[in-house]
Length: 513
Image (cartoon, rainbow, N blue to C red; front, side, top):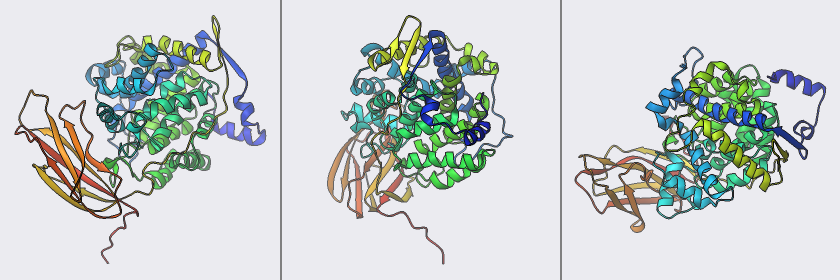
């Protein structure tokens, strides 16, 4: 595997154009066995990375995992997780939901088909995915279901962890991958949240045609508008990697200082929790760059960056899996994978052993539809030069100005005074007495005495509304939010969590003197 420091030195001495290195516009061919090895490597990498980082997921918020902190691995690990904690593999079974839609309807299936499939699936979802699921079940379809004015979690990591399969069916076809990302990613995300998936899919697509990790990282970034926060953050990772290539912690600290402040996701506002796509993508890239092409080192660094520490190593390890193939994955990890290879992923009828051929079939369909070639035992494609997708910015002009801790239930009516131009009230329906009924709470929201929304809140966790109320449509100034529970039930309560207020200017810290 290539030593990236050596690569930098050689590049400075003997500069070669990016076009020559990647071969944009040229045709590349793979034998079937080589392509299947790359596909298998991608899915195996995701599964291994997700399992490896699972125990530390969101236990290290705004903190690195120390090198002396052991991370467990054993031969039955993946199998045990399949049986005991299947929800950990949301990184994978969400991809499989979309693959199943492609299997049934073809690669030209509309966004509505993908949206309805995951909205009606039986698995649990969180953040942008769950907010989008709720929107879809209420009739708000993509792209509106993922737009930041309809989804407070629009910049969250969700599409980023679900876009792997897009790059894996688009070998060398970065712009074709962006097209699929537009169709699928706007179901649940917008802006930087969408860019996370576009970028990941681009890295996977380029991993088929280059084994140069820094080149894949930087060329894939050309799909993202330079004006976006996402682009600035990843570009900073590359800059600090070049400045301090031997110490990923220095890079991590610089990125944390510059880019870790959460604006969108209300759970992360003024909090150490950060599920934002941008910062977690940065951790993936830190793993890739400082891992120097080494599978374990890449995965371990991406994990030790903290926050969403199962998703990030899954992404980084999956990209390396495509780049170098399954055969290059260290034998240490393979027994654990092989013991679960024939087990269907939770909520699907697809196992690892079956997804390889499914991936290859869909890849063949993409090649035939978008200018590639498929022979009896060969697959060919003209490598696409990355094109930048349109600029999208979520929460532009909105700054968190207050986070108010709320420690009480709504009762039948509650009033909240605040000053700003946007507000999110977090909360949920709590069951106080066990009830077998399928209860749905109905609420009304009033702003300054005017009714603005009828709210439907199912107790069912699968169908739940992620936040009680939100709006980004107010004039800057003092406002009163009133939430009224119109069908109270003695066995349930509307539990308010925190209130987040947005204003036109950032919050100013209060000094005691």
